[in-house]
Length: 212
Image (cartoon, rainbow, N blue to C red; front, top):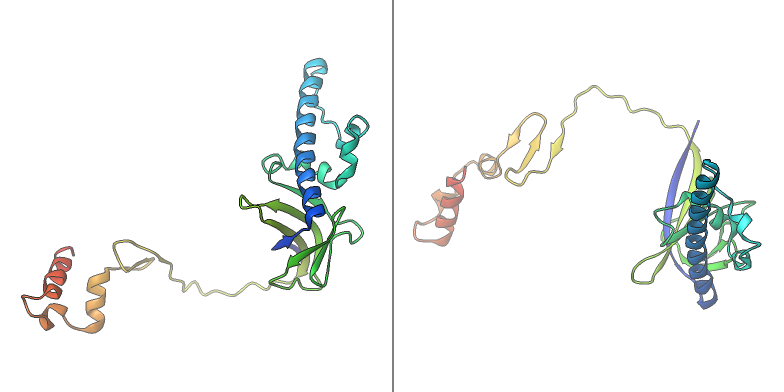
């Protein structure tokens, strides 16, 4: 039995206090990352070593960092590209859990969420990433871990691959189906035979036939 990970993304509706704390966490994550980067550059210039300080070492100098989720700050250095738009926090001792229509998150408490799908009971919540869209909406991506035995599906290699084509009806691994002529083979006749020459239908189909 192997372990697998699966993420579930839900819309959350934090209240005013929770929204302010989320935005404050975004700012602190960005602040910590920038500070770590500056300190690492200074250490390298002085000692010639690649050393990264911990976010905890900054709390004495910047007490406001104690107000936000410490795990979010610890993950800041691992989320360089998304630090400005989101933050991640880990589940420790069931600190992230679902309670009815609410999601329990560290520091934030119970946040109202819209669970449009259920997370199976045997799935263990590992972490949560809170993000904000350009329109101001907040979302949470819950990373879960589960164990499952996946039995390989036997194959006799009798497989045909199909792909989309702009020019033809489709392209496969064994043939190419021209859209118009493939259609004619299905209906078993030429559509021009049923159209009078002066009609627009006749002219349109005649032009299509000339393309093939």
